[in-house]
Image (tube, rainbow, N blue to C red; front, side, top):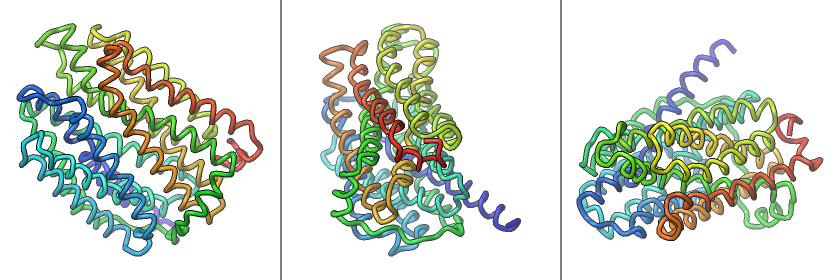
Length: 404
């Protein structure tokens, strides 16, 4: 036992670092949008497409990976490394093209496919080291995803008006992740994942507790990626309205703080969900994030301090519940259903993000920044209803060791 602990800490630390580095590819192009617009016109649809292409690719990659049982057929570490390498190549290639090239969404799609071999496989690697703390471990992985997703905005702040800076930064990070991933060790809980079967999806959907857990996740996803995709544009427009061309803080740096604060939210969510219950933590987090999606509009054009304060609270709350939906599904499922239900949950949830991401720029045109983000509140508020309904059911005793 004394020898296993150092191996556990070392492997998890390297895994978390690799997740941060590789997941920077997700919003690499999105972080460059402001700099691209400063140089040439960029339609709202194409701007949204640079993000939604990654979402669509992730759905396709996750589905094919589950259908072919790739994490079981291949060494998980090898799959992680190859996926990070492909993400690095595709992301770097985007910097060699004109920013509005029709090839760019294709490269973003392939990047999304490859990230389906990074994030879910990373969770599977972390689970091999679980010791009754699965919720916390998944929370750590989600925190790494959050920090990685925020990091291109930091590069955008340092890179001035060069739109290639965040993209090349993300590509280099993914390449480093591919190199470091070979040092990740496997824990003692290595087991074959349940086989994906379409019939299992239907069986799981008939289960009321699983259906409620899924509805909670879908509401969460409706809000999360649209917020991450467009909060940078909101901050830039807000600072411009208040300070003109001389804001006290670079908008991209402010966006990094807002999105990156979610790493703390994911960690706290995992910690408290294992102790207080998953339905309680997810409900509180979604209620807070839903309120923030409404309140953030009322600080538009206000001081940088006000925008950061509401934005950081939203950044923490919007991701605090994320890992707990996967953990809830695992706990509510018969083991034979887990592979199918987690795949279906992930794919449907990310498909919903395509709608909300593309809806946001039109909401801005129709409603203005003061009210545009409020349309995202629909998701978390419905999610609160679903999780509190689940909490009242006897089947919820299976969650978080009886803490629901």
